[in-house]
Image 1 (tube, rainbow, N blue to C red):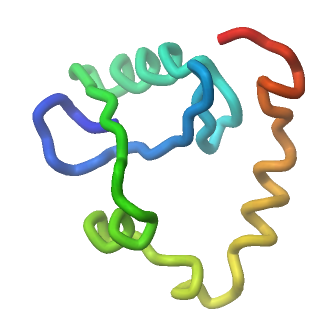
Image 2: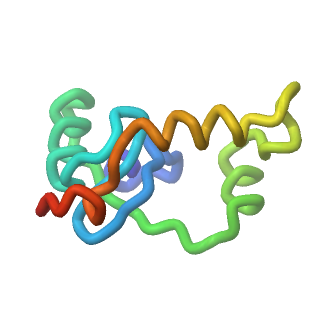
Length: 93
């Protein structure tokens, strides 16, 4: 998501069927957008990223996994594994 009209992305998250996954786990995407807009005090817009991970990271000055001191994937997988996804819990967005 980004501030409406801006180029810079301020928050990146993954989606699935009306759900969003970010550092806080799974939440309804509409709730995530509303909470961030309230925090920012400005209108935000959802943008869909259509580039590859490498292209996105380069464009937004993010490190690729191989640019970390140690492999971040085991830690990331452990973190993601803490949150049961909606398709497992049967929750609706």
